[in-house]
Image 1 (cartoon, rainbow, N blue to C red):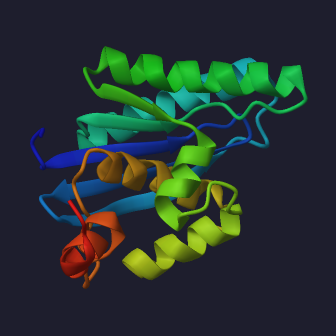
Image 2 (cartoon, rainbow, N blue to C red):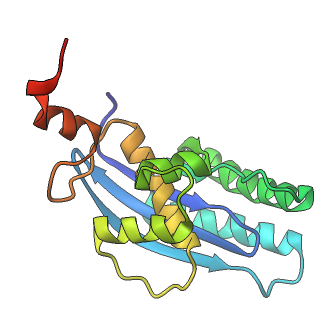
Length: 185
């Protein structure tokens, strides 16, 4: 198992709104360092938006010094143009993080939802509600992109077998330890 002390930069890429979070982990504990969005809706063109994504990612790296990027894979929708724009945004983030020496991990939207709520088809609102219950954070943003970014960071934390400390044991390992008398080997 890898070291449990990490600062994970979670990114939900987008060309109008990019969600980001930083999650500090240590053993079984994790805490939100920051959670917000970069709003690019008023920028005039795609190149301006890609430059803002790059600059914002570099600023986050320089300010917080994360060691891991956890990023949501592009959603495969019906509109090829949207998917292409999203892929470019993701590529800019990954490039900035690789240049800074971060480890990069990608997670599908379904895997993220499954990891946080237990249901791969959960809504963004359900994911946000579960994260709020886990961390009791307050955020002034009206965008779910910020909680999506937190969800991908938490997913990385969970996928690396580093259980979250939420006050009481949860998850499959906790269930097994609580019901070990019922396990047939």
